[in-house]
Length: 108
Image (cartoon, rainbow, N blue to C red; front, side):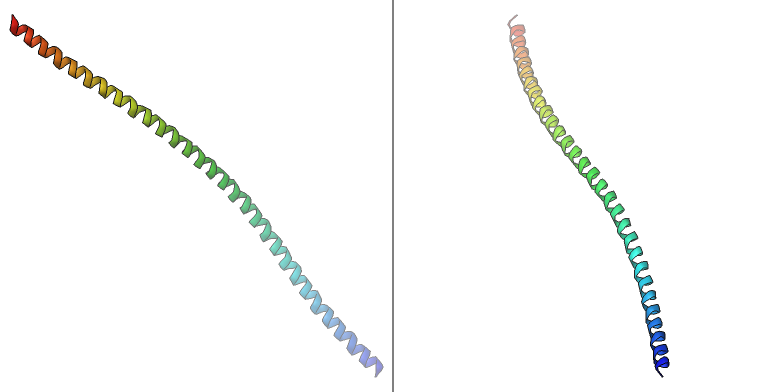
C-alpha cells in the first residue's frame, strides 16, 4: 500500500512537473517574442527620432529662409518707394521744364 501511494505521488509529481515544464516553455517563448517586439519598437523609435530631427532641421531652415525673404522684400519695397519718389520728382521737374519751355517759346 505504501508503494502504491508512493507510485501515485510520483506520477502526480511527474504530471505537475510536466505541466510546469510546458508553462515554462510557453513563458520563455512569450518572453522571446516580447524581447523581439521591444527590439523592433526601439529600432522604430530611433528611426522616428531621426525623422523628427530632420524635420526640425528643415523647419529651422525654412524659418530662416522666410526671415531672409521677408527682409529682402522689405528692402525691395523701400527701394521701390525711393524710385517712385525719384520718378515723381523727375516728372514734376519735367512738367516744370516743359512749362518753362512753352512760356519761353511763346515769348519769342
